[in-house]
Length: 351
Image (cartoon, rainbow, N blue to C red; front, side, top):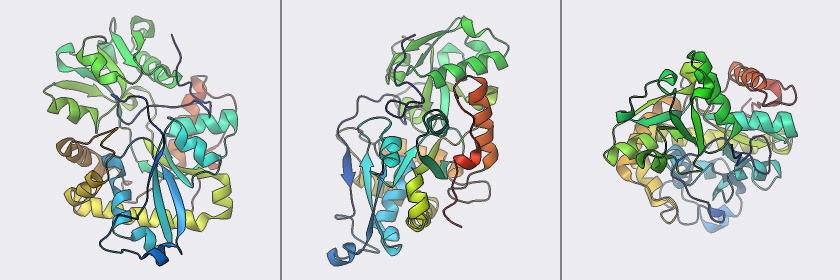
């Protein structure tokens, strides 16, 4: 099978995409605080005193990023002495490569890819907090296909974006369900995961997100079924994480802590008034490349709010046990060349 977007290489590695109908990204764009007024507004001279923090998103703005735009508009970052500039990735691995190179202070990326990059290539990045506390990645199909679990995939075709990680997930799920993994056909459909299903090219896909593609397809009139990899042997994971460089952790942890504190305030606003925060996001969407539908993003908010904090309600919480389970599984699947520990991947900048 054709391998694109090869996992574990800092220059080319990805895990999944936030939205599966995506097309090739354009040049990196940046959004700052200049045109965002209201509560906590700072003057031009005050902004000059703020420390700039560049954050590279995993994709164009959508509901999972709404707390950032809220924290910018409400002045929460400015209160912490920082000015946050939002960058959209021009390449799928920008969030990792730019933070590792010191060209951005924070990135939003994927846990398995960070494990592989650190273990296999010694990329100097670590996680300072989990964003989505549970998986959003699903195996999605049209309801008419009657696919409710791995046992229903025998003899079917699965669309994916060509990564070894997705192949390993499918293999684990099939083996856990007692089904021959060779009984399914994998079709590399790139980023055309939704359309490959609706046009009948494949029977199911892996890589779509429960908070985006499900409400999007349902709004378009499609009935769907889906299940999660972690229900069939793949370890539970943090879907999205905040990453930074070793250099930032060693030399400017206070700035990272300020970013996390202000971001947590934005998340509290999301919980208290999701529609108001969504309106802020919609005002800052990248309509040219990734236009947002308010109904779909509101449904996405409903899915995301319960999983953007730990069971104790802590924003950014992460546990070594989650990292260890993923390390063990990646090693079993032959995706890790070297040993690594959770302590080499995590950083607590708040204490």
